[in-house]
Amino acid sequence: MRDRQPQARRRAVQVVVSVSSLHFMLTGPAAVMLWAAEPVSRFVSAHPTVKMLALSFLLLIGMALIADGLHFEIPKGYLYFAVGFALTVEGLNQVVARRRRKAVRDKAPEKS
Image (tube, rainbow, N blue to C red; front, side, top):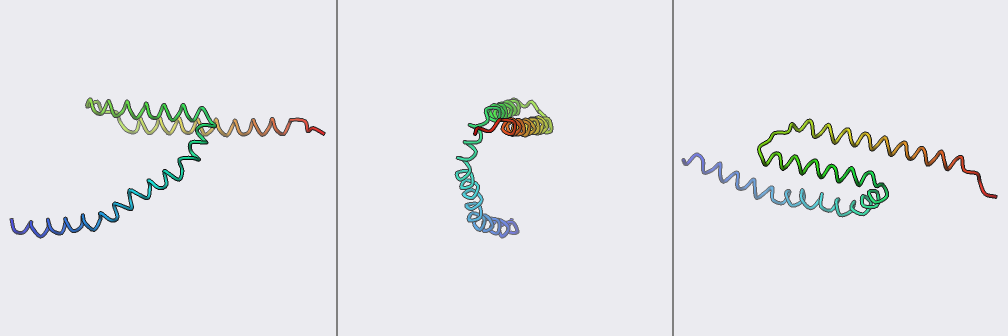
């Protein structure tokens, strides 16, 4: 029993030392999220398909959490594949839309 007490004390000291690093690990990403909120909001507002994609991701994650809470195992690979596939398709849609806008802009007659 006495052999375990020094280990417990060392662990407690390790926790106390890591509290300051924990503080920075929590406030750093929070600051980045606050900094990026406005540009991300503008991008999502400008692209309605991205808004629908974000809502569908929230629905997918919510359903996975409900299924997990009911002890119904959904392999995470299925979820990751669905998200990756949707992001790839949306990225391709964004590229095609940008090329179309550029082509229309280049073909438009210049006003004199």
